[in-house]
Structures are given as C-alpha cells and as structure tokens.
Image (cartoon, rainbow, N blue to C red; front, top):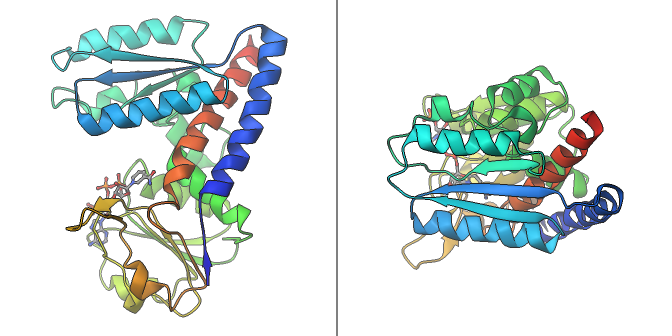
Length: 284
Ligand SMILES: NC(=O)c1ccc[n+]([C@@H]2O[C@H](COP(=O)([O-])OP(=O)(O)OC[C@H]3O[C@@H](n4cnc5c(N)ncnc54)[C@H](OP(=O)(O)O)[C@@H]3O)[C@@H](O)[C@H]2O)c1
C-alpha cells in the first residue's frame, strides 16, 4: 500500500513556480502579484489568507491582502475588485470564501476578471474547463490530478467515482477526469446504491464533507483512494471523509489527512498566479 503524500508533489510544483517567478522578474522588472480579498473576520479565513500570502512571498511574488470590514456591502467590494481587475500590476485575484450572507455566490463568481481568476470560479473558466479548452483550472481538483500523475496513477480507461458535485471540488474534478479519459461516476447525496458504484471503481475520490463516510466496505480490493475531506474529530484530530484505518488494508494507494490533498491546493494557486502573470504579459 502506498501513502500518497502531497508534500513532495507540492514542493516540485512550487520549485518550478519559483524558477518561473525569477525569470519573470528578470524579464519584466516586476514580480507576479497575487491579491487576496478578505471580507470580515472569520478566524479560519484569516488563517487561510495568511498562509496564501506567506506562500506567495516565499516564491518571490508580490502579495497583498485587501481586508474589508464584515459590514462592507457587495457593491463596495465589487468596486474594489473592479479596481484590481484594471490594475496592470495585479496578476491574480482571489476572493476568500465564505463571504458574509449579504453576498450571492451566483453574482460574485462574475466579479474577478477571467484572466486574473486564480481560483477559476468565473463561469468563463468553468465553461472552458467543461469544454476541455485551455483555462485557469480550479486549485484542488488540479492538485489531485498532479498528485495522481506524480505517483504514476493514470485515470485513463479507469472507472472513477467522484463523491461530491460542488463547484469547487466535485464538478471540476469530474471534468478533469473525463478530459483524462476516465469513465466518471459523478456521485452526490441523491445517488442511489453509492456503495455498489464505488465498489466497481478503480479510483474513488471523496469530497462529500462528511467525516468517515467511506470505509473499506465502499472499496474494491486494490482501489486508489483520494480523500479531500477535512474535519476535526472529537479528539480534535484532523481527519477526512474516509476512515483511513479501515480503508488502508484494502487499497493499493490512499492519501492521508492531513498531508495528502491539502498541500496541493495552495501549490496550484501559486501556479495559477504564475500562469496568469505570464498569460497577461504575453497578451500585452
Ligand atoms: N484539502 C483541501 O484543500 C480542500 C479544498 C476544498 C474542500 N475541502 C474539503 O472537502 C470536502 C468537500 O468540500 P466541498 O466544498 O466540495 O463541499 P460541499 O460544497 O459541501 O459539497 C459536498 C458534496 O458532497 C455530496 N454529499 C454530501 N453527503 C453525501 C453523501 N452522504 N453521499 C454522497 N454524496 C454526498 C453533496 O451532494 P449534494 O450536491 O447532493 O448536496 C455535495 O455535492 C469538505 O470536507 C471540505 O472541507 C478540502
């Protein structure tokens, strides 16, 4: 059984991004720049935002967090984002989620210009992804594809279950796998006989947000399991959507939580910022 650790994969992505950032600076006399827009004081969001900033600075990017008050109105925040969209020194813009309840996700996804949309949530990017066209790609599913590729696990010709259909993880994961020639079962809370489906699957990717939803009874012998979930259990330990203890004896490879998918997300965010910077100067 192989444990699919994310750290070496994330480090190899970051190393290549750092080299590209150096070259970019030599060529254009400025650093690629990522701006994170944080609205309000959600403690977890503040930690995530700080980590993104630290990663950006470490790779030689410019970084700024635009911290707006919890009471900032959607139109006020939108104006700030418009300014960032028009600022030629800004390459990537990320709106930290969750936003306060006054914001409608269906509107917010249109705010960041598709070329600076490093989260790849803009409908132009999600549409391109679904059509298999080149675009900025969502961080977590792209990170999972990189992780599989690093460990030489090809989804081509395989039956793959994706549990979850969120716009952030499940749905784009399905699109990327389809593009990679997998046959995809896109499962969700209304899927009947989930176990029967996952039991046929060569690869099972679990992004349901339900602690220990999947145990060995969901898995066929030798399956590859990717656990996207992140929770704190009653002992305050970080755990996933998969019962690792039970699953590990049946699978051929599995991601740990923490330390599997988690490190991939930030690494791909940095890669996306670098891609956005290069695409923008290339287009200028
Ligand atoms: N490691 C990372 O970097 C990272 C990044 C993003 C997310 N996450 C974690 O990944 C998990 C999923 O995130 P998300 O944003 O995709 O969550 P989400 O928006 O809550 O979506 C969960 C999806 O799972 C489906 N689902 C829920 N219960 C199910 C069940 N019992 N059987 C089958 N499907 C079920 C839901 O179906 P319906 O659509 O029918 O409701 C939904 O599509 C969370 O634990 C989150 O913290 C981790």
